[in-house]
Image (cartoon, rainbow, N blue to C red):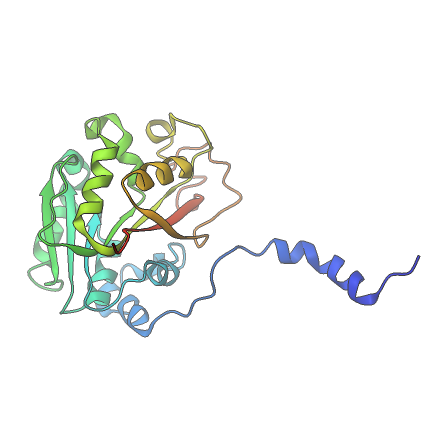
Length: 253
């Protein structure tokens, strides 16, 4: 039996081709690079590679002049970069939910000072989780590692259909909703409380039910070594969890 050299080569290479993550090879815009390299971020740069800052920002499509809402900003890792990207003609509205206040009290106090000095295009909004109120229609709503929290008892419980509709209504036509979260195994309904994870298909169904269309996904934070069983705070997996990134769009019409 005869084999062509080309066929043999393709057969040998196939396993390596299949192993490459499906992440779009998109150039990082100069304004994203400039924001990441901002001098006020010197204490955060150690986390940039782990959090794939450039890839995530590029995927969101955020640009100078945009108005955005960041849900549950925590210590403000993303807030600092967003502020640099949108610039003086844009604005970042950070939503601090009342239900999370005991976890964010120190960060909120810190940001009260930061918005008066370094980050003057950032506004702090304290709101109940069940009532998202935006000062104006925005281009982008962003949440990282927090969508699963809205399913947990301490948040209400929340009406997710109503919440996602509020996000939808806060956006301009054509606006984007970007969700990053820790992956749970399919059908694991207890993962939000027990592991602080969520089934990606649950997120898709809930967000699309509000009228959004899935506009893209990224594997930038994918980790096949995570079996989705451990709590995300477990030292063995913390900072290395398998995470999904979805970009949903509000139809232009």
